[in-house]
Amino acid sequence: MPESNEPNAVSLPEVMDAFDMLGDEISGYVNRKTGEVFILHHDAFAGLQELESGSYGYPDEAMVALAKEIDICDSYKVLPDKFEIHEWQIMKDFCETVDDESERDQLLDAISGKGAFGRFKSAAYRLDRQDEWFAFRHTTLENMAIQWLDTHQFNWTRSPRPTT
Image (cartoon, rainbow, N blue to C red; front, side):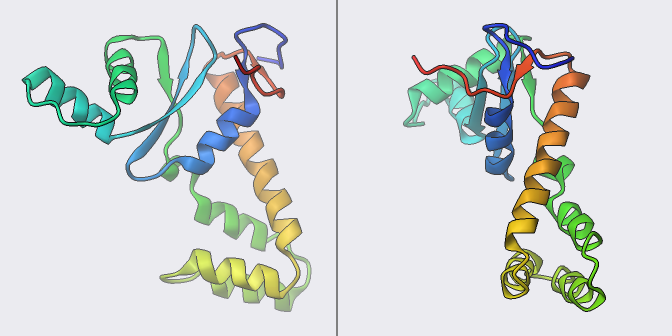
């Protein structure tokens, strides 16, 4: 769907921010009715199970309430997880755009093996390619977010949602 000015349009910047927060224990959700983007730690769902079993101990009641709403309501769509976003592949794709063969090889070497993310960032800074990297990553994530929003037929906007 194209960009929209509807009041319940999903904010593209919020989806991209959510992409940056996703992890093994954190998921993102979009409410189809309101367009709001939520980040939720998986512990909130564990807190919900504790609450239902009578042994509640999760400290953030608002997060547990959100987990309950997500659990019982079909108006939430889960965002892609970190494996679908695949940060390593984005780094590799960036490396392949570097024209200078020596620098490209240094960047590709940096992403092999354990500790690839830290080595890659160090190499990008050392080669003065950090601005190119950040721009490439931003554009890639933006395109992924737009594709996801369009695939799931969300109205979306490039503007942040108004704060209340």
